[in-house]
Length: 249
View 1 (spheres, rainbow, N blue to C red):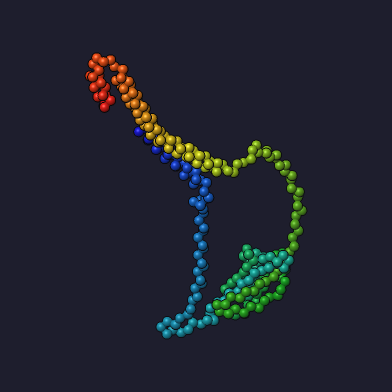
View 2 (cartoon, one colour):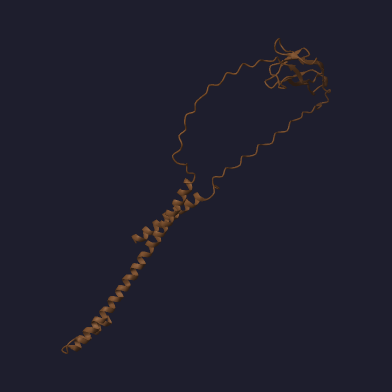
């Protein structure tokens, strides 16, 4: 009974190790990363419409402002110019870090041009005439010539001596995980084999014991037959009867 429990435990442990090893050797399907969710589509812009409610009068569209905007570009480098003043009629705005400007104004005609401060650059084009209509954006790009700047002389960079890198004593192993998995598989097979061998051991012992009992029985019968024939004549009948009873039993 004890050997049966030990063999069952060995087989169970072997199956667990074998399963773990095979799972480690399989491709990383279980560890596959999920695809990122697609970004939601942008919400369409909402268009507002004018409605007459209660029979009211139609609003005056001439009072609805329009928009003037654009980019100020350097004629030398063709790069946008941030922080450049722009005059739009009587208004002055400044370009952002991307060189863009913009303002909402009433419908009408405006003169638009850059208005650089002293030393900030030179005007390239004359004022641009821009007509603004209600709820209509107008784009007008402007140009300016920035003053040239002399780049400072580059100082030689200090030479840094690289520290000697010690060569690795051995090459890094990249199949350690696979080796461990094969080790688990090997141990699992060994434990399963040992458990099966232990489960078969009691049956072989029982077979040997039965064979030994059969041999002993045959030996006893042969000995009794020999004694039956070698007994002296006195009391022979009683002895024969006793021996027959023993043989029958």
